Image (tube, rainbow, N blue to C red; front, side, top):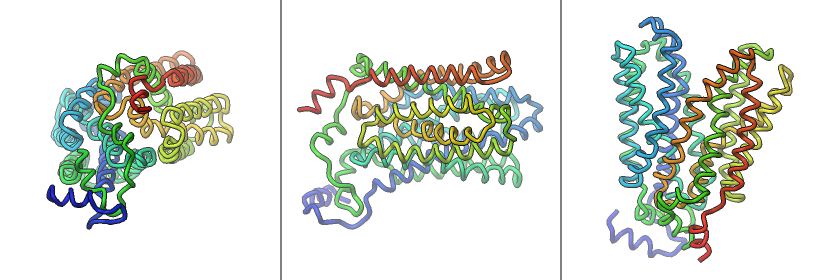
Length: 429
């Protein structure tokens, strides 16, 4: 579409449509596909490669699992990725990040040494943040500002959908062509995904204006909402507010739920009396309600704000964990899993929405990246704490109790995190 055509389109009456479908739908579709493909292959399908690697190289389970701890690089590199996204846009950041993950899979397929496995894992995790949640947040806010909550829920649910699809496909491929070819084919497929990103993704305000008269385009936003999409706070201004640090504390401490509890949920359920099969079924139930949580609380955030929605899901996590702590092997544990899943799943959808509500879109990527740095703490300490507590006491009850206490602190931090005065005064103008 030429510049003169886009100008004519913007001058058309409100109820007049031009040919084509609003690009935003393709953008969020590719974003969801990227999240599902990357997280599904990098994280959820990893377990199927453990035994083949042990058999091929004679590595211990601990040596193989150390590669997961290298995931801490995602936290340290998130500010860099965010800065690149602010400077060069989501399209190039996403494509480059996906190619990093693809290259890591291709290199893994020909590796022969343990140090190579660790190096390629570092490359893979370096590409993960820029290919998943960080650009998805910016793209949803750019293309669907009025429906950002529900659209964020749809896009981030790609994590759950992609994982459910990737797991059986990867398991079948390993049995059919072996682990090396499986990683190689996954790398080739991700190269194709990077090309799709370059063709579809756009995140400039002018691109949105050109598309606003196409079919299924959202209604126009107010001048106040437009100012939030083009304005906001700089990184230096954001980090000087107490709001930023309250959010960092709250978001960081609640991550112990994922790293210190969810990672140990299956052995906990088995310990209290459930069989391995029932425990795995309960984890499927957990995943289903976690996916539903993204849709429910993404939509709810448009009515009660993302900050309050985040507090609600942390309350649900605390209730679910408290019931699990005392339910033992009774049927009540099933209800606790449902409540816990509804609380846990909404984190991915609400995190970028909270950052946008508080600081705007001006340097959104850089601010999100900085908030993610502190998550390295629960990534490193959560599994270690759980292991030490189990080895010392023979059960996970103390880890559950500590995590519930950290959730209480997180909720208090979010209560204190108010919209910065600078941004609030601009919105009231």
